Length: 632
Image (cartoon, rainbow, N blue to C red; front, top):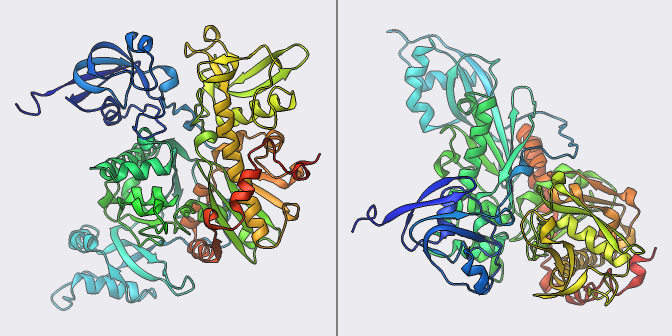
């Protein structure tokens, strides 16, 4: 029997997308191939229960498993990662299982500082006017070009093979008047060394024609890009989308595990490449033909995401002694990776400090300016792999905190990302024994996003419904009840929710949040004390990443996530990874600074740092066992 004979069509509702499937494939894999994102925290291991879909028609091979009751199964619910294709079928993806990308339709709210002292991009263009050859002057085309470049002070240039292949025809089509695009390769060993040049292409002699660079933030959850006019330095508004890898796991560890299985690495790379290509297609709609004049890409991502982008096996990142295959990346031709760009486009990837402090943090520190400030600064990127940097212009230390996915809605029974339907604001009236919900998009609630989780727990703690141990206080509220997973707080009954289920906060959710905030806070403490300082010595706290845009500072301090400092010491700088990549796009000097920043950051492996575990255990209360740290 041929593969074609053994294939059939799977339909996904409500998008009405039809995808070919082969018998035995998981429905999750089929959905991924059709670019239908289904929530999955565990990378398809069947241990999170978040990928529930409803079988509307047809047959699949499946069993209830751990997360579906017999009644759920009888009503058609299946786990997408465990259900195997067995014939034509139609599935409906419930709203609580969808990975909503609507929050990426708008740019980040935070204001950015994209000013550079010297605009000297890595790609520059030169007008060459040469005398056409004749019988008396039959110098080879390449020699003629290099002589013209040398006349402008450019000597000892390397030349791209693609440029040489197109050179004879281009020169004659343009009567030997051409535009030369030259890439200046930043040196790796010594950032202050003079860069050497490489001729990328020859094209029509229009120096006033726009030529572009593209900055990219390759995040675990999302990918953002920004087009930059290298001729003028104008940075266009960024656009973003969900990283297509999310259905293979919501954190870097689950992605690393998936990459090590079969063709997992190939699948993960193809997903992130497809995500970037989708964003390039969107840019093409407003900037027709830009890819022909796209010469440079600067990309920043955590260590794992950088490896998955390029397709390098990342498994040793999670194995002691935690050595990444690559820390400092050579220049790469993105067209070889499958990116839909010209062969002359060059990509530079930000270097990593360690396995868990990646190029996104180096880029973020560059964007923050803390590397040149006298103020003692704490830089925080809150997320599944929360990274922290402490220091100033004289020194910097850094570490990664394994916070888990709670801040992004993972590991929470009714958790979700910050998208329409997520509970973000919560107010409780102790005397009236009632609460009020603020939902993103102002519709019915579906679940709880990370910032909403912090706000709910902080409010319930203030009002005496949750105690220091992270347990619900008996008889404290009519919304506290016994649920299927133990004691829980009813936020919204199914009759008032969009997902046709009760939206609840469980004590297991509280435990996950406390572990996450404890990992972050004990990380700050460890780094500060390692250099002989205290939390009170911090003069500034910079919060980066999308999570910070909706973070209520008072509530984050209330539960012990942030240090107890005056609110005026906190600053939010948005997607600092993309900002830093944009700065480096505009200026070779800024790229050199990024390399210098990376070399100045001393990394601490917290799990191997004396005292860290003691601090972590002490932080497993609300806000902390040491009341003096959070005295009002």
